Image 1 (tube, rainbow, N blue to C red):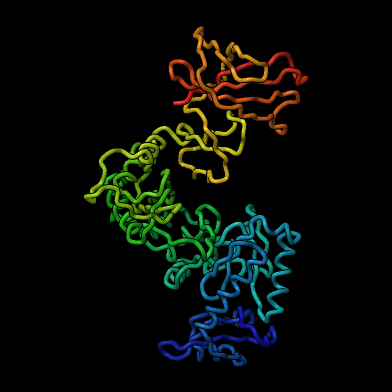
Image 2 (cartoon, helix red, strand yellow):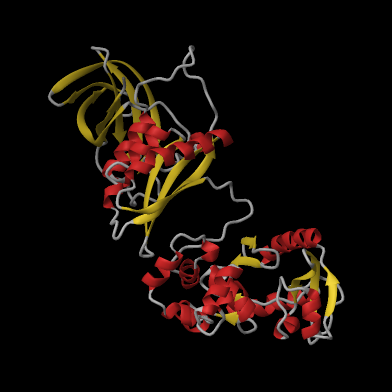
Length: 488
């Protein structure tokens, strides 16, 4: 990507140079220079011998980085998620955004037009994966559009340098006669795994190929994303059981979280097998935690589900859903309570029985009592109850309400006594009525209103009764009385 200003002709080879160990070296080159055989990192004096018409300008590396960062934010006109890709590229997650501009091809045309108005030329590509888009934008056709089922075919003729590998790995692949991505893809996975098993991702063609093909995730994260907390354990030889290494991994990860003042609500354990496969185990907590012992217990009985295959030699543990944690002293002497907290009990029960088996009540915005509460996943965030109007409600609700026989002095007045489960209760005090009308958007036509009374009988027991309907309301016969709950 060229810097803004008076753009040179498209057929003129132009490079940006920076100082190197043995003189100026190429920092970036336009398309015409790349077609002439000029590449980044080469000495300018050697490239002038190849291309006498080469135009050289010195790069402003710091200024270009700031300009690229501004351009990244400017590119959010097309999608909400953008990130810088090295020193000369941008990655945009346009999932769900392209249809707003008439499709992917039309979106690329608009991008090229707007960038040209800024004095910029760019290679553009749309693909399902970051790696495929990177390769097609730099080595493919202009404004390439690639579907999920077209990745292998469109990447096959591209050079191996399109896999984002370091120089030493590229040189080794060329010496082996593997000059294209298609040639690398035809090599048996086991052979590549044996050769590149203990190398970093920039030197591992198998992992880069899996990222480009969509077999290995490589999500786009926004610049506002929080700090990533991850610990890694590289093993000298393949093992079958990762359990002995989990205590140290959990302890190291929790130490990082503690130093940064954060806790996590998700933990992702990933084991990388020697045959190229990847297995993951995820656990969750109801509240942010950085207690290593507690987090370690959540992996009990879950790690055993991993099929070790031929073994694995790399283990990573990453914290997810990271939140700030305030340190609070719970005891005067500064000690720690040994009792099991409710949040930890919820975490252990959920880890053992599954998230669907452990629920908790959450308030809902409804004035009908049986609809004012719902069941939610115990690990989910609790809703904000500030907007929910609460009134005195029983500690125990009957579901469904039980019908009772009531004696009252006047038709619209409070009850005098009632019979429930063959027991007669004489009312000494009452409060009410609290009238609750039907919700017309939920209830059927003809649903009767309710008048609730809080009452106390001769033994001091407090109940919650309601009268369903009124005399002459045209929605049925005489009103019916129900017991809906008991107060403490």
